[in-house]
Image (cartoon, rainbow, N blue to C red; front, side):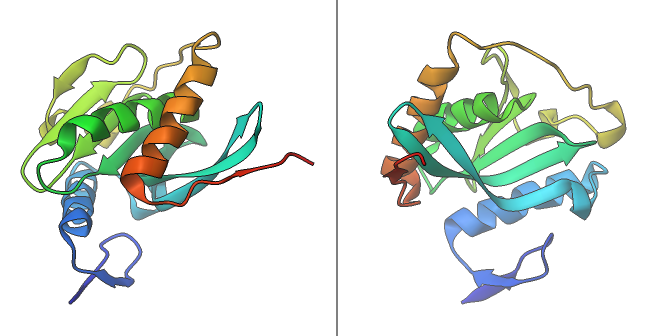
Length: 165
């Protein structure tokens, strides 16, 4: 019924999505990322013209205060829509890589251009990670809307747009 999260050490419900997250955590830890660099359930605000929406990344790898890898975990057989969700989330957060995975498969993409570079094995080792900078200024509002829409439909975060103060 419960398993222990490898990064936080906390008990979590044993679900297919959680098992996918643990798989990703295993890979990150094996590739040299520290537990301090891996943020579980990273919650953040997304500013929209209509107000502010809350969003969540299942895993965020942050290196030297820069967002490096966003990982979104999908239920079985639902990987493709999570690829676009991961890409939008990575772009909003300015991360270099976007990853979508379930228990059976994974897609690793470069956030800058959306190019698929492979499966979980494609995540670079910690000591070989090169962070990329990119400017999506004209596309950022679109990516924010995609992120909020996908989270509300697929991820059940209960995204609600709150009025700005």
